[in-house]
Length: 209
Image 1 (cartoon, rainbow, N blue to C red):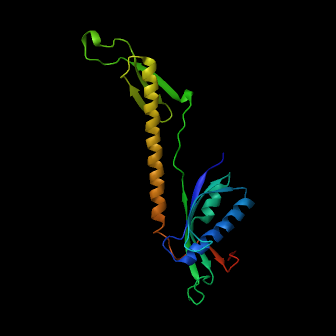
Image 2 (cartoon, helix red, strand yellow):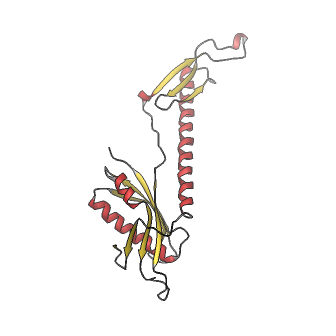
């Protein structure tokens, strides 16, 4: 079964040389992925200050070997080279971060995953009380998520309302998952370890050392 993963390459708050390294290291990553039958899709990128630079890029990986491939890239990556913007700059080591993220879960139900239960609706009493089981509770069996509707007199109407509420619950959960991943990604910008690189590339050709 294929596994979909996200990798983010970022220069964090590093100088423009690090932003210069991001798209070129991405190119190496894509080339290596092709050799290993792992597909790479660019989901989002943030342009750098200068042409052909990126502050960060988020990619999705798909394929049987995606997890092992991601592991070989996750961590600090170093580029050793002369600054293309400041030729007289003494610094030669420029670092970017590559971090693995699990995409937020997207739950899509099928009819067979749902269980409907009928309940007796509550009312104010007297002649207005609803004595039929028109209230409906719907349960998404795989997750246990449930929603109930009892406002309508019709069981069919309550069934539709319960389904709508269940869909809203899943939408809220999905958005919360997206927000959590986004927060992790922003935290990565401040967490680059400048040293002990996982992989090192050198020169204008970005050949691996």
